[in-house]
Image 1: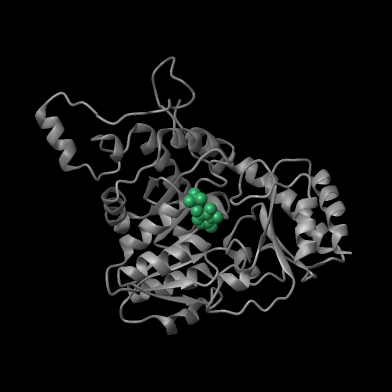
Image 2: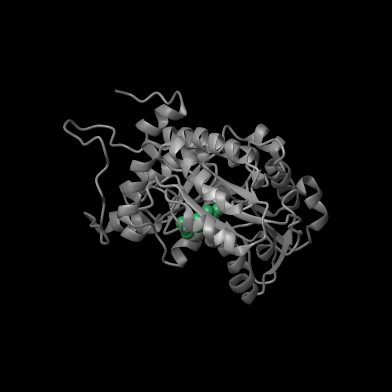
Length: 392
Ligand SMILES: *Cc1c(COP(=O)(O)O)cnc(C)c1O
């Protein structure tokens, strides 16, 4: 049976599988392994000399048939030529930044990026003589005014995953490209189901597969997605550091991808219902969600995304820290912990003022990020309703 890749839904179930062989499994097996054996020295030398290619079997760290299938599948979903799997989402970000820069480079980083990305820039990049300037993610084409002759990379997120501003992805990608700088976008929030940044002109997309792609809070993996122009430098950097994705995480990512679209559609609808309900409560000052018209960059979300995922933030009209503790501790169905994208709902307070330097966080009150899972949506609302009473 040949595969007709007519839609995302078909691609998610048909890609990343063994094509032929009677009695083959529906799934690829878990592929452990370090040493790979060759029939002749000529075969070995051929593999060694082309070991950076995305399909060459040489040694476990360079990939195996399961990692290649997963990488090809993600590249296809993203509309990109290549994908490189790495050990975590943060590794995808840091390897991309390292591959794109050298001592003396300048890097522009959006002010609302994932906090560990910022920490990496301020510590490791700074230590290697890379100058980092933070920028307002809503600058769009006006970012051109901040590029320097030595600007090598522009790092941003769409949206930021604490405050949910949506940048103008094609405008920022174009500013970078016109200048010869590499644009790197952390696309974890949307996944390729809701946004394909390579198609919008971005050079490198970094994903944390630990979130929706794995989807069950049991996987840690990252992906670097790019076209041919950047593939070799990215892959060589990952290999220079000795990084690779683990066999089990590759297996779980392939399994997670099968249900990615239906999970994303569920959390989209559930999160919108809960966010709308929250926005109507007197204790809530504002809901920060890209699908809400008052979200900064909502028009870019409408233009460039096919949907919204299951995390958003709520701003409570209250400065009392004790009440925030009572609210979080009073939630019975929402777990308290970092990360998101699993089957379980989570609630986590954030202080955006402590996380940015180039832009002011103009809001007062306290921010809680909500990640919606697969529990009964009405029960989640009832749980929020009882916990909200602490703000009265
Ligand atoms: C979680 C996260 C990361 C890091 O991913 P890990 O797999 O936890 O290393 C990077 N970017 C964003 C936006 C994230 O939410």
